[in-house]
Length: 262
Image (cartoon, rainbow, N blue to C red):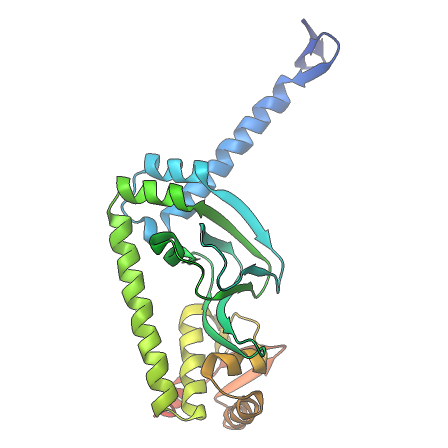
């Protein structure tokens, strides 16, 4: 093994095969350390990991994997085996049910910092719905075995999962109630307000829903036809409650929308 100097850098040559630049290795280690620190900062903001120490989070980061999905790509199908939980770093994901005839009902849209797919990790059953990327998605994944180890080490995670289960069950009950008691105008108004709460960005003159929505996608969220939703959006636009631009909806008069729910 020979060591030699090139300019201000030292390198090592091993039997004429490989040459490693010390400076390059140092930069690589520094970059890896910075990436780990960024991942730690991100995991600290994920609600399901509240209460975990930095060492426990590092253990999760070590076993997690990075995945990327294209806009429109199916992340998993209903009835697929459930062995992985997903934590969104960037992008939006919709959870939906699709009938054999192709009719779709969207249950919820998740964004940065949200997680999904944890139900199957708890009960070991197949996926209960489809997950589809609404835009380019970057996420972390955790295997079922690693998730269970984390729960055993910190029962607070299990408590948080139960809280999420209860929260989502309550939302499901509310969706059923809305379908029964609200007309399509009320359901669309309520869904727009919900989306503005979870995915809204303040802009001049209102709050823009930062999710690209077609009329068909919005219709699948409220259990109505695209034609009915088109009529409702036209009415709300004429009233200056909302405006639309390239599948982005901006709310201008949220109070009036709220009054229209019931």
